[in-house]
Structure formats: structure tokens, C-alpha cells
Image (cartoon, rainbow, N blue to C red; front, top):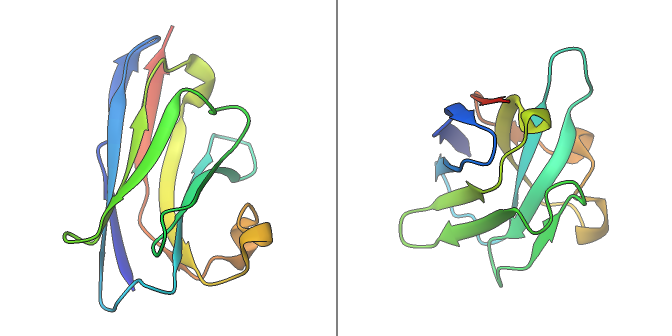
Length: 124
């Protein structure tokens, strides 16, 4: 699976951005797609994930209520709508795929395909 993330940019605190992840190469029916982020000097952290089949979702506590993950089955795309952005949301955001069990989806080491990342900068 090839992944292409886009949609990052510079936004003021309180603003919104919508990230997109386009997937190609094979059917995604058995996959979970996740969003992770990595700020300078910090570990890569889980943001959100969605099951391609069924659409089940999960969020990190830090983004719950502000971010929404969704998918477009026809376009093979996953989106991350980010509202009420905070300076601490500043990071490079990556989309990735995995076929591991749902209980392990927050572990970035269990994802095997990664997009190139898109930079989100939130100014205060």
C-alpha cells in the first residue's frame, strides 16, 4: 500500500485544518489506517485510527472532541478533520496502515506502511 498525506499548513490557535491520506496499491478492506504525529525532539505518538471495514474509530485523549477521522471508500482516502487547534498540536503528521488487532493500534511500531508526512504548525 502506498500512502500520500497532504493538507498540512500554518494555522492560528483555534483554527482548523483537514488532512488527507490517499491510499493506493491494494484493497484496504483488511486494514486499519492510523494518524500519528511527531513533534521535534519527541516520540511519534498516536492520534487517531479507523477501521477500513466497519469504520470503527479511536482517538488519543489529547485530541478527543477536537479531531474527527473519516474515510471515503470510493476514493480510498482517509481524512483527519482537526478543529480547535492548539500550539501543542504542532508536528509532522503521518498516515499509516496496519492489520494488527484493534487493541494494539496505538503502537506505531506495529504499522508497516507510512506516508511521507505533512507538517502542521499552530501559532499562538
